[in-house]
Length: 349
Image 1 (spheres, rainbow, N blue to C red):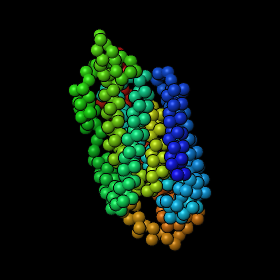
Image 2: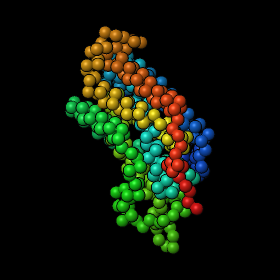
Image 3: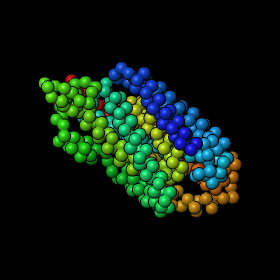
Image 4: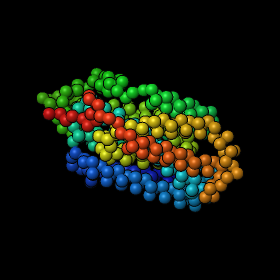
């Protein structure tokens, strides 16, 4: 029964933060500056790290009876849970960088003004919380019941890495999305964005705004990204609470991260290579976890050994790979080319 209260408390915390975000701090529609976005990004990261401190104490002292369910070291596994949450959070945060590029393309395709982008992203992420929760619950149940599902997830990660290696975001046209075509069959869609609302009443008729189409495409793209990212977090831990909470905290900071990095993300030319390496590493870890545990069984760091030490190693690998990608991007910046894709959408006039 205690674990149920833990989940209720987390959901209450999330909805409280979202209510503060939209109902208090961002109540008025405005263009979020890079400085404001960086402050919000820092705040969301700080909240995630603070929550992770809480995760440490919850698992270390087996509060709510949660520690012994998914951890080898039983009641005293605060360090392992802390590393799992942080590693999962970093993986999801890293993969969200790729999502930022796609969101920029969607806003550009539908001509969404910067003034209304925050509102679209808020409702898009709110629905993503529900969808990801359902997908994580399904994934956890499948992994718990069928051990071989972890190899299926590893295969999905490997295919995702190959898709990132050889694919291109520019190949897809958001306006040709199946959900967009179905929406246009159900609702008449106005050709211009007149205000921040998803529906507009014009000459006695209701029209769907292009904002609604952009919202639907962002939601469907997030489902696609979830198919890639959720197997990645299960490669770090099978604990549903850590999987879900790290995923949600990464999502909560996506809006501010978008406004902070949308105009700069293309300059980090080696980040994509870093993401590919991370996905390949997690895929290999999922397949060869037993072998890795045996190889490091005799070693101990900070009181962690076996599978716990493997979690610490994964944290180091992911942080190191991302740091190398960022450093190389700064040392060898991409040259601007004529006709380069503009990530800041044009506003409707």
